[in-house]
Amino acid sequence: MRKLLLFVFLYFTQSFYSQISPNDTIRVENRPTDSISATVSKSEAAIITDIELANSAPQKPKFSPTKAGLYSAVLPGLGQVYNKRYWKVPIVLGAIGTGVGFIVWNDRQYKRYRNAFVAELNGIPHEFSDKPWIDKVALGNIQDQAKRQRDYAIAITGLVYILGIVDAVVDAHLYEGRKDPDLALRPTLIYDNQGTQLAKAGISLNYSF
Image (cartoon, rainbow, N blue to C red):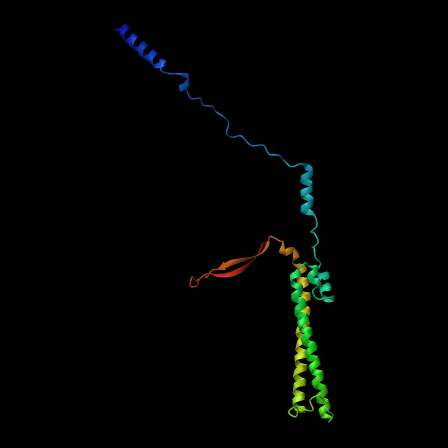
């Protein structure tokens, strides 16, 4: 009986090992997964250069506000040329030129009717003597109106001249701000906190410091 059991055991053992082939085995390789990649550190010269750049004095602005204002005061529009804002030059020159034109025209009208008014008071013939409906009262009113319009034109033209200088100074002063990423002007949507109105388009000014 023992021989029979031993024979059966050896038979099954041999059959089991005969079914295993080398191609059926799976190789497992254990590789380290906790390795740290090597990083290249900066050289001493590069570190010193970074420190010097960080501690260096701020660069001077590209455009001087003083020069821009002086140029614009000497010749309107020249400050805008200095700031390289060429599209503003026709606006400045056109506004001032229009104002000067109104000044000259109203001044001529004032002198014309003023001379006629003085001649009418003194009984001297003038260019409106052949027009009976134009008397000294009408001439006085017309000359006052022409003088008033001339004075208005002088005031407005002077204001435009000053605004041109201010624009050149401010534009030169804010030149660095136009390229500063911390200062941004962007379109945005304005929402109603109460939720009663629809969102509206607007502009947001963001400044980081």
